[in-house]
Length: 151
Image (cartoon, rainbow, N blue to C red; front, side, top):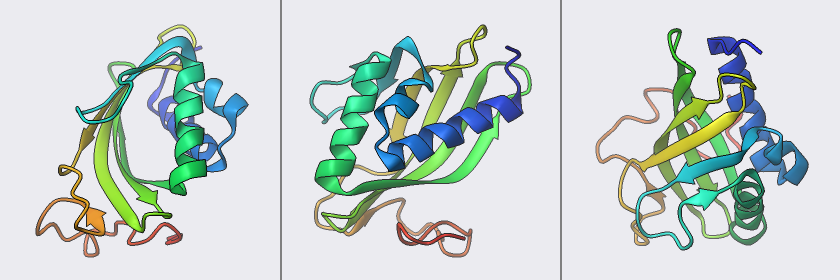
């Protein structure tokens, strides 16, 4: 399989749809078996290693936090099997959200995700409803303002 900007974007969008649907098989199908998802410090059991673990952890988030995710921006490389996105993680049961970026590395042979490195826009602060960059005009830049904002 040739990894192109179009195939990387399609895989990322398929991955987010599988996360939102809490679909284990669809999630696993987005990753190489030995994929790794890295996170900033503070979460238990990180990094998540293996397609099965990544799938199980996101399903747990949907079931326990009411998690849903929106993709805000995607940028795919034309010279390397890599992409970066901005996202919002809506934790509906807690009525909070977290914004951040992820760097994706794709397997050159299969086109599947081999690595994700997550970066949060701000430290998780339980006293605010949405964790995001201070003074950034999310509304003016067209970002989702709620989990059901379907623009």
